[in-house]
Length: 596
Image 1: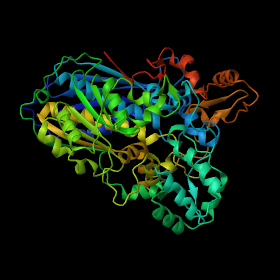
Image 2: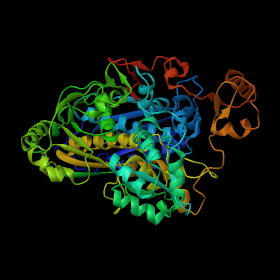
Image 3: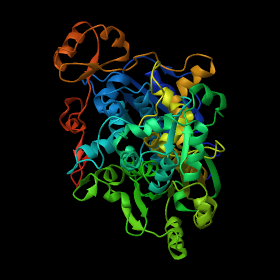
Image 4: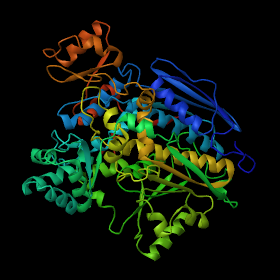
């Protein structure tokens, strides 16, 4: 067990070494994150097999082991393409286009790698608190299910969607052909923007609801008139209209542009706040932990909105922490967001089930003092308020460190202050600004940020990873820690391979047709990436999905059926027994790791 009173460390994995192997899309990200956290290695050994493993050794810890796989043996999930197809990622990402589409970026692999690092960090935190060494297993299939968990919960709800599921959505196009994203959370600003561009009143009214719910539905069937309006105006006028209305626009940047400005920083930062002042939580003691609940006995205070911070806290809760959710008077309004299960939003449950809630009015000095008192007894304070809001309220890291020197103070933001003049730090604006629109679409297609909340989910994973790194650093040093993570960091992790190609002057985009599923008589199939070129030569449109898969397999090719109805995942043998229902009847995906 670590001895935090004497261990001299700057990063949480200082003095540790690691070895990793397995699919390079997963092993490469694992190795990169472990290095940034302080661990050392000779060379990782990413192979091309379906599974891999990572071992951390050194310091005062027993060896920590993690294994990763694409899917269960016999499931047919053997790579990124087949995992995206089976878990529903292709279906959700493709809603804008009216049919399933693969993400050209290795999204499931990236999420799996971050979850693997989380599992290793959690196991070490458990050891430092007196628990036994553990082995953790992760799978890309579980990572994919986690990524679509909100959409899956909505598909299994008691009522229908709040907005139509139909093709359509941003980006918009200016008269010069500039592709851009539009963002506002205010219906008045939306209306003012379109009036300034002389849009038909009926079209701007009809467009607000699909625009407002595009985060939830992954599509936005706007009236065609809105796209026609923007094509009739130069970008300068569009930008002026947005500024006057209180909305924001962001032209889509290229991967080459992002590579040219990349600062090379880690996707999170950790800053010691000061001595632990003898706090028991900062000296490696605490409630006994089991191998599957390494954070048992720790308290997380979460003041999160929408997806990023709530998901990070949800993951910490799955690891055993007691999560107390701070909500405004009257409760989180998103609890009522349709569709509902037993009267509670299915999407809200996907991120917040199992948490305790307390109502706090942060505008009230009395309630802010109450929140400080709660933070004094917590291990983690996690929020994603607007930049500067915490300092304005007297609830920034330094403020709370005065009442709890051992606190891990975590902020999940859009930009982490790394891009001056950046637009609103929301998922789609960050995708637009960082070249994700190019990374997720292959060559020959117009760039378009995914309407699946890619960065909110991956940002939540990075947030949990950063908190776990902060907890481990606290256990090893006795100091409280401030940790910052961001959607920008998530975008850079996701696009790292494309950014490397761009920095070398190579084409950063994948080839035309990359990860396009193939139509069958009754559905779709997705070939594995290595089988895609050969599979495309077959005409499968007259065959059932089952017969098409048989034909390809008879020719030595690997493919799997594409999930198009997320509600059918409950009965999908590729995930036998892994999807359950919670106390409200909402679908619940399996924990993304298992410990032993």
